[in-house]
Image (cartoon, rainbow, N blue to C red; front, side, top):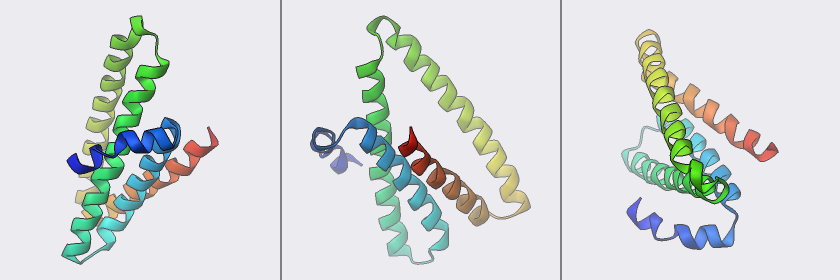
Length: 127
């Protein structure tokens, strides 16, 4: 993630923040879907490296979009609200996925989560 952060300015200068954001979300979904289907350790390490790159693309561009398009006087409130929704969503998704993992399996939960995020990626292209 540290190495890929050096390439983010180049990527953002070449493509719009929105495009990089959408690619990051789509990539996260794809990696999250492929990871539980894999049983090879080396491939798992590569997938997690890609996960870090796509996560960086998503998180950096999300912050950049908020900073560029938000009014300066409201940025603190916007970032606070953003953090609040992320934290609430994390608690809900962790609780739900833990419960579902007890009933089914961790692999099943990761596949479903990957499908949800992967389906969200193309939807973002419609916006």
